[in-house]
Image (tube, rainbow, N blue to C red):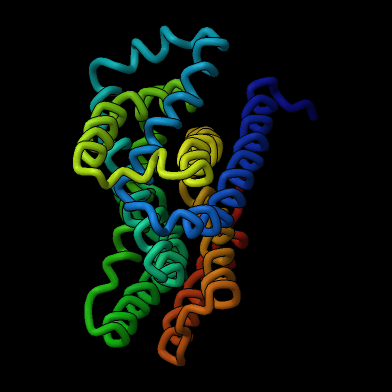
Length: 300
């Protein structure tokens, strides 16, 4: 029995989507090491440099691949609105993440990223009418329980974890529905953010609080921040357009697992019994979710 050319093309796109997702999340999993080295720099400045130098990295790629017409088309109408929202979501996500890493909250970022796959699943249910089983609903309930345990542990709402998982889930959803391919879309996001970033950098410079140019090492790392983030963002946006949100969620496990290992074993962040209870509930939720996903797997 032969397989149609359309089905072959879909399978090939899915394989590329899996490879792109794997590359994105592996890089993101190791990025806390990079941001930790920049913990003496204001997180707002780091995020601004990330945006500006990402623009510098992506623009030549768009020009060389002759995709400027796609960029110009995306700068108007519905796509521009969606990409503006996406740029806002990812900028907020990076600001919270960089601040959290620099201030000793890598474990909290790990918690947020562990929750993210289940938030992705709920976005699929609410916005794309994906169907989930009772066991997967049970997994969502376990996440709610883990948040409750975390509130008891901290004495306040875990805003770092919540902010990270919500902003990234909505970013992924927006990039899935916008009718713009990965590279042109990423350039448009950076074009939207760049004027604000440059304005903030000028303000910091005028106030004498700009770290850029202070020394060669810091300056080089701020410049390379664009490359360090634009490469995985390209991989992710490609994956988001070619995989189901529920499938994409599985790859998110790479990032929080790496963050968890870094936070506990490399940077010696506090990890007590209540922390263990929170993560244990999340891990149970992910086991339930993943097992059910695999059991009912009908292709990616």
